Image (cartoon, rainbow, N blue to C red; front, top):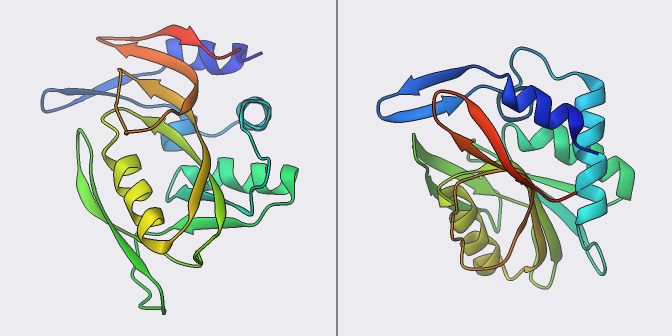
Length: 182
């Protein structure tokens, strides 16, 4: 399992954003295209890795969590909440201020009620900035986070709680997969 993910990661292009070497991959960027077999492989592995026991819903962040979240929602019959870049000003909306290794911005959490039991999924984690902000927003909304699963982990981010990742990568002038869940 994960052969497609590993081979596509280890052959993907790298671009520099200042001092940050950014890898471009279909799962993290949707570029050049997300092949169905790769998406299916990653989503199936995430479903096997995640503890869904007692979960009410899945939460993911825009943009690249959406393809994974959609498939996993369909596979598990759990509703999907997407943390959006757009403010809707709905009752109970929680702002999520994110700071990553290469950007910062504002996201908005909607549709979470006190007592909801959620599973968080995402495409990639490197600094943990987005995930920390999302965890804080879910806490403010009164939700309980049951499990967190990330497709690709870069480095050793600390988000203040355990989480799972399918693969861990090291990025220099290329991507090297240094650890895998399966």
